[in-house]
Amino acid sequence: MTNRVTKAVLPVAGFGTRFLPATKSVPKEILPLVDRPLVQYAIDEARAAGIKEFIFVTSRGKSALEDYFDSAPELEQALLDGKKHHLIELLKQTNMGSGAVAYIRQQERRGLGHAVWCARRLIGDEPFAVILPDDVIDADTPCLQQMVEAYAETGGNMVAAMEVEHSRVSSYGILDVEDATAASMKVRGMVEKPQPEDAPSDMAVIGRYILSPQVLTNLDSMDTGAGGEIQLTDAIAAEIGRSNNVYGYRFKGRRFDCGSKSGYLQATVAFGMAREDLREEFEEFLRGYLQVDVPKPAMRAV
Ligand code: G1P
Image 1 (spheres, rainbow, N blue to C red):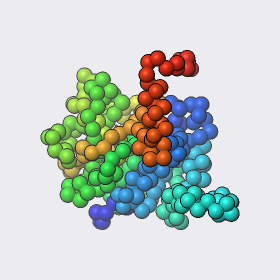
Image 2 (image 1 turned 45 degrees about the vertical axis):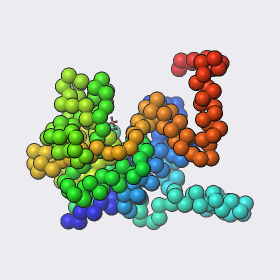
Image 3 (image 1 turned 90 degrees about the vertical axis):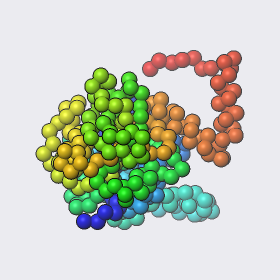
């Protein structure tokens, strides 16, 4: 069995209810941060980590995602005719190449574990990455690349981890680790969305995983867990007892929860400010806007 990680699963079958009505017709993963869809950030990060094959677990209503990664001959011709070569260059990042991308439908929404399990035949008997595009991570070395490097030392199974506020633990998979000061923290327990009083720590799983194919085998017979769903966390936790080789990786970087409106807005500001072509004007606006005496639009409840 090879130890190189070249395949990534991207579960994108959710309704994106927190972004309705926008997500009635636009998949959440296509919502842009500045001018790039959320999913493009995930793909760039995966490519930096050496991923060559991308497996999207989709559902009805996600065809915009498939179009996004397809070639667009009319658009490219129009740009060519208009001599807009820089835009043609820009479109190249959306090009997947034949055979590099696969779409699998999750026919029933039965949880993250089930979504990943749907991709099992395309993964086969090798380690693979899972990327949740909602979690956007800004880092000097892309998060998954950091993990691939750490995984070369540890092997086994690895989840990205960071500390969250104690009151927020019920939104995450939470780890019980041996030594919270290590970068690769040996995990001795993990639980999906515990109540704060039951949480073993405040160390949360963030949406990047490197998993052994055994986790897929565990999912074959996984019962429903938290929220009545088949949980990826539970299938990974089963590996602690079975082979004791699960690690939480404390990545360097800043994570934005783009599955929430507030996190998405924060990411928009951060990525907007990071853009050379926008920073000056945007910063001037933000500074002025945040001054208390500037008139603001009335607050609107929805
Ligand atoms: C999923 C996982 C959870 C993890 C989180 C990270 O939860 O089930 O363990 O902590 O992603 O974003 P979800 O946000 O899909 O409810």
